[in-house]
Each structure stands twice: as structure tokens, then as C-alpha cells.
Length: 334
Image 1 (tube, rainbow, N blue to C red):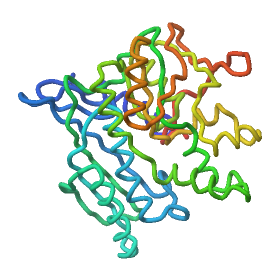
Image 2 (image 1 turned 30 degrees about the vertical axis):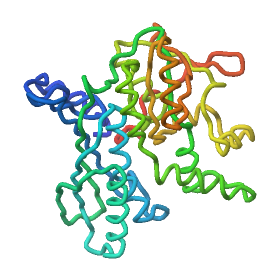
Image 3 (image 1 turned 90 degrees about the horizontal axis):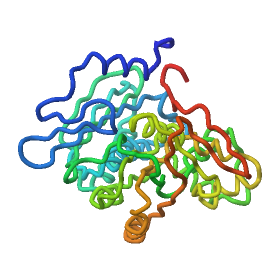
């Protein structure tokens, strides 16, 4: 598997599968599958696994934070396709020595977030395991007339991102001790760590963007802006993009690290786990997108444009820089 790689395995699996047919309209390849029965717009399904020592570290991740994030990352997948989440399945591989109080805190946080989005826990499974394993499957109602996909971008489209970028990466660096916090900015440290441990899924924003008819392609930022933008470019036929460094939305806390030279902007573009929405839209839709930003209270920043060139360029400090390492995190290569 180390030679094959995670994405090599997925690609080989896709080649073995027949095209989606019948009620299954979209299978492997997007943020969620699309099951559409004869009536209605169908059900979107996404699933995610979290494994101790791979996806999370219990030395700095509390039971409550892990319970919250386990659901939040799946909610973000449905937000990326404009869906309304409705029910969830939770499966757990539990070490025998795991404390009941820990599990209670995990479940409490999971269910509290589910209640916020009116999501019902519909089932799951529990097994014994050597390491803690969490598997979440989330179903949502597809928007009309169809979900937003990764594959609709065209040359000339604007590129947008919601919220701010790089906070989660900085939060992880602080939690792991790779970056030292500023002793005079404890609030900034708390903010960045919270952005990593408790990401916010943009459900309402995703629904409005889907309903607007203006968005051509969209996904959530899990692997990093560069890697996820590359997913859109590849799915849309092998396009390119130009990103303006001065337009990248940074939180005040992240901006302090960049201004002090403690972190490079490109690191924030490749760090991942922001769980913001990254999307493309024709310039004619700018006014409508601005209205959605006002309505939701979520900043939507135009950071660049889709081009014909099969590469991603960052324009900063008066020069263009080609961004490499676009593949994102691979569980077997990284």
C-alpha cells in the first residue's frame, strides 16, 4: 500500500465499478454520493473514518472535541453539495480499557451538534478494537434541481472561499508544539486551536449557494485550498487557476503569524482542515454572491480566476509562483 497509495487504490477501485445507474446518480468521486429515487431530488450520502494516531491525537483532543468534529467533518461534505442533512449512522471501534466517562462526553458532544442541525442518529455499530476507530455515515436531502459538483468550473470563472483560511493548520501546529504561542496573545491561540478542534460546517451557506443557480463547482476545504482547488480543476477537464495572495482571507490571528514571518502564506494554502467552502462562479454572479454573504453573515472572498493553463499560480509580492504539492494528504504516501 505504501507504493500504491491511497489515491491509487481509490482510482483502481473506480475502474472496477460500472457507471452509476438507476437511482444511484453519482457514486465515488465527489464529496457525497447521490441516490435519487423516482420522486424527489434524492439522498446524498457521505461517510468518513477517524482512527486514533492517524486522524487525531488524544493527548490534546478531548472526548467532547472529538465527538463534535466527527460529525462536523461529515456535515461539511454535505454543505459542499448544497444538501440538507437529515440522519446519521455512527459506528465505533472501542478499546476495552476506554473509560465510560470519556465515551459519554464524546456522545454528548456528537448529539449536541446533531441537534443544532436537526440531524437524527438512525443507527450504527459498535465493536471491540485495539485502537479507537470512529466511522460516521451521514445522509442529506439533495437540493433542487441537482447537487453542486466539483466538475462544473469553466475558464473565466471567479474562485471564492468562505470564512478565513489557515486557522486550522496553525491551530494544529500550536497543539503539536511545532509553533510556540505568543504569550501576550492567549485569545488568538485559543481561537486557532478551536478552529482545528471544532470546525464549523457551512450548511446554511451551502444551501443558499446551491439555490442561487450561480455556482458552477464547489467542495469543502479538507486537504487545503491548493489541493482542493486542484480537485475542481481536474474534475472540470484539466483547467488552471491564478490566485491573488493579497486576497486570501486571513483571520487577525493568522495574519499576525504571517506578518511576523513565522509562517508562509503558501503553508496556509496547503495546510488543510479549514472546512470552508471553495467554489467557482461566473463574474455575472458577483452581486448575488455578495447578497448571500450578507444574508448568512459569512465572508465570501474572491481569491482568483479559472484559467486554461494546467497549473495553479500564486501572485504575491509582484511575482507569480507555481504552487506544487497539489495532491493533498495521502494516508499511505504521507
